[in-house]
Image (tube, rainbow, N blue to C red):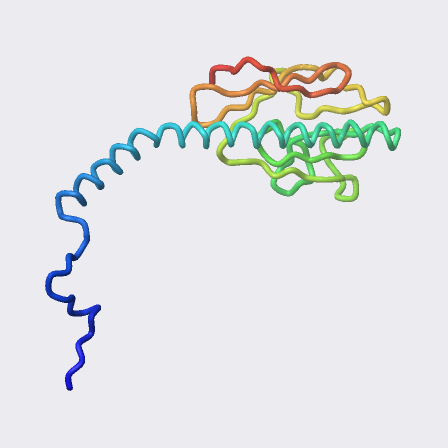
Length: 177
C-alpha cells in the first residue's frame, strides 16, 4: 500500500491559496510609497532626539555643578574639556567637565567631579564666549549668564538660557541654525 503526503500533494478538488504576482507587486508598490511618505517624519524624530539629548546633557552638567556648589559650599566650574581632560577649552559641544573650584588653564584630575561626553551629531555655542561657567557657594552664576545654542543637522535648534542665579532653562522658541 502506498501512502501519499497530503502536504506535498494536495487532494484533487482542493483549492490552493496564495498571492498572485499582481497582488505581490501591488503590495510592494504600496510599501514603497508608504516608506517614502514616512521617511521625513523619522528623520525629524531623529533630529529632535539629538537636540533633546544635548539639551539634557547640558542641563545635567549645570544642575550637578550648581547643586554641588550649594551643598559643599564651594565654587564649582563647568567647562568643556580638552582630550586629556586636564584643561578647559571653548568647544561646548565636546566633553563637559564639572570641576571643584575655579578651573583656569589647568585642571587636576582629583578636582574633576564628573564628565559628560559630547555628541558628534550636535554643535553647541555659548553666546558669551567664556571657556567656563563658575558657580558660587550660593549656587549663583553671576557674570556668566547668557545662552547656549544647540544645533544639529537641521534647520532649527534649541536655546538654553543661563540666568544669573545659575538656573539653565530651555527657551520655548526654536532657533534658526
